[in-house]
Image (cartoon, rainbow, N blue to C red; front, side, top):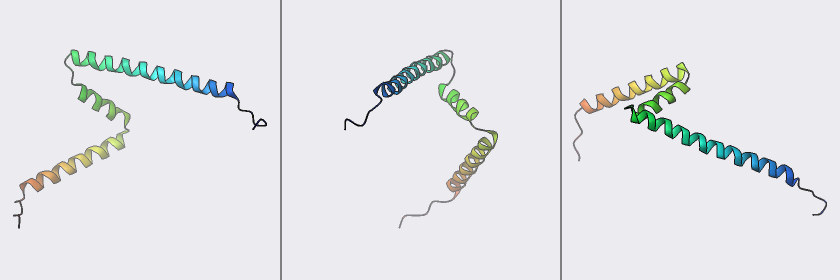
Length: 89
């Protein structure tokens, strides 16, 4: 085992960089919560804001496909509700 050397300094460097990134992510997530809280305080619906963010991440083709499928499923559900229910045996 003494023939194998482990670059401890390099390992420490990776670990510290990852820990710093985790800390930055935590801070950014807190800032994000604060922005949503501010928007909510001004009367905006946070769920809708999150939906808009989600949609803006998609390209137009993905959006169109999503809207088409959503519309198709809703229509299928509405059609099923209008059909008489089968009686239980």
